[in-house]
Length: 187
Image (cartoon, rainbow, N blue to C red; front, side):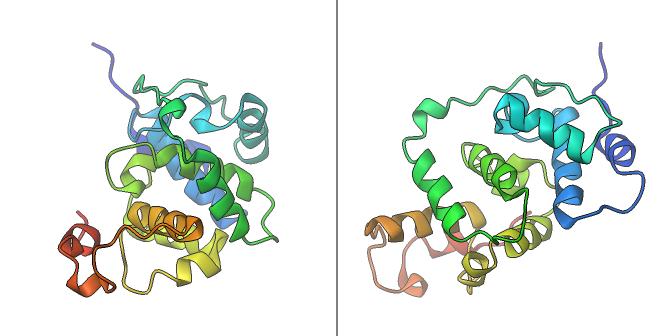
């Protein structure tokens, strides 16, 4: 029996000193979880091979990251017809002063293919981490989530609104039959 490595140990190896940027810390959490077999991120974290290598060299040069997820999960991007549209929504609302935002976008979109809460699927350790990541990289978009809607649902709601598609059956979330599914407490 092979034991999966502990994500906290991997994290401390990846980031033995304070992070240079907030994204480096969140990426270290996601990479540590991914290396330990948590989350749904596929090979290369959902990045292109060259971007994965650049991320590794930029933030974790002393750690040789595996290219495959320890979980063995493979996501099928062909079933994600909205992939480019979701990328565009994120790019259009990204903070232009952040150099690595394209890596964050690619990883977020890969996480959207999972079936759990987005922070779980990404391998982050808490929902507040995801909230902080989105506020840092996409401040205007994150500020629109005034009712604390689940982030994956919120991103898709934003996507629908940019496409002019409104799926809600009533004009106010407070009266929608699915309200609790979007706003219930996450564990």
